Image 1 (cartoon, helix red, strand yellow):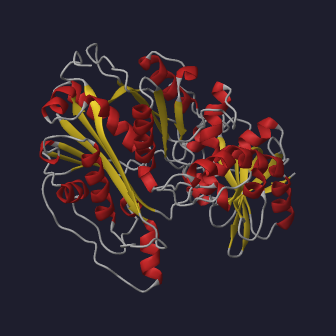
Image 2: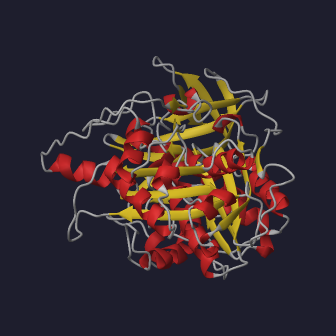
Length: 510
């Protein structure tokens, strides 16, 4: 190990922190306080003989949900400089502070970026950190409490913006897919149709996928839910497990009501030695890749995400291993389809002996906003340390299966002398033309049914004779149309589309 070049990037410390309203000692911590606790845990995890905090020259903060879009609001206020607010709590005053773009791929991408900066001598010690306090915000609001979480710390900060371009198409928003749940449901229903399964059969398929995840979450002290569930319990539609968008039940979608934080510290091998970090704590970054898909409606095949698979494939190539060589796997699981996407490509099964999650997954461990993948990386690092020489893969998904970053880790040294192990992939997939208004015949490519206060809405993605993609909807009053969608055998069927006075394409079955 002593032969490792001084400019080799290594992960030297990781940390997590969480709290729940029902926990003894629950402190209702703010986003910044939670992240500060995670940073402190990561610093302690380094087991360094010298002060790590003072050596941190870069902090990249992940956006909390409350500051993730131009229209989002932070009800209790926010920091004017999150990376510096967090650093201050851990005793760090970095030369460079970054607020990363929106998306669950952010942590993984920053690990690759910071590792490359270190290898090129532009940084010595960098931190990736983020948090969510959605559960606490809801609890305090319900209790009528309004704490002041605003902070003005000033200082330089590189704000990379929201990065939401290409995540949604206007026709999706206009026709009822205004949130990730119905948008992802379109992908899962497209896959279901390919497999020839009924909605109930596919719900059970999702249950079989996620039942092992509940077992992992049950043993994770940071998990939001520690209840073990069977596939049948996850699939059965009940009052407590209602349909949130066909085919999803409530228990099988990301759980965002969490208070969780995680941090990762990366250093050059030379600086790690100076800080007295034992080499037994080092975990090497063997590969990081990130890729972007076309906007949801422009994708040729709604049942798969080819650039996400390209990210994984290229990361394995850079690391010089195959999927079979992996010992630990965490696949981003906000919904079933990002996991199925990888399973289908590599012939994986839900009962793979390695498991498909290290945390318990977003529906059970918790979907800590844009920061979930930091928790996955923390678990991967700990697994690698426990099993020296093993390889771990974490897949980080952002947007509406829009962005994907893959990381591969091991205690086995990675040679960075030949160049960066971080690579951004170009999207080489064909893109369909997306149109807004349409009148005439169209063929359904996918759909979902979304419950609402005034009834159910059917959201449809279709194509016309020219191959152009369009959005349409079955209105709340068209009970026969909704029933046809819920029956499930509609993909590939023809509809007649006509615009209404609100600019929406209203669909009827021909």
